[in-house]
Length: 163
Image 1: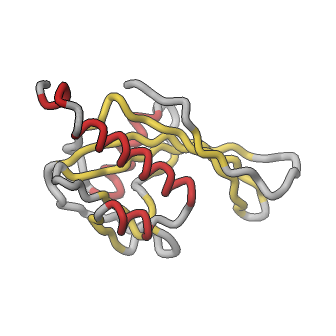
Image 2: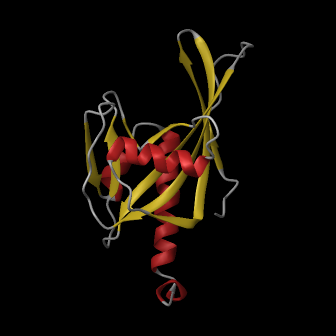
């Protein structure tokens, strides 16, 4: 799977030592519609993409597929081999500064059927502008814009239709 070195970092507000590192993986899910709808999950305090921590021995792609299934029930997804992005951000958990890295993949589904996990209070299939309004964090908005740009380029590329 091809990757892009484009990253969307957010700097910590503290320079304190003892920063812990976490790694997660997720999927930006879209429909095959024209225009596509994007899946966002309601985490209670914010809306975001399906994602979660890597388990021992997992690579990013395996973790992303597992988390997508656990959080949404989606198994049938066509991942785009030409799109993968990584974001980094900092947050505090129990007074500890966490440096988190998340690898996202872009995937297309035929069905809008979703079975959300207990971790979420809802979900939505949203058009691009509504999804950009709903998604809470700036780096998540940048990811969605990048994915949308990639999809638009694919849609206008006659070579992609010939495949």
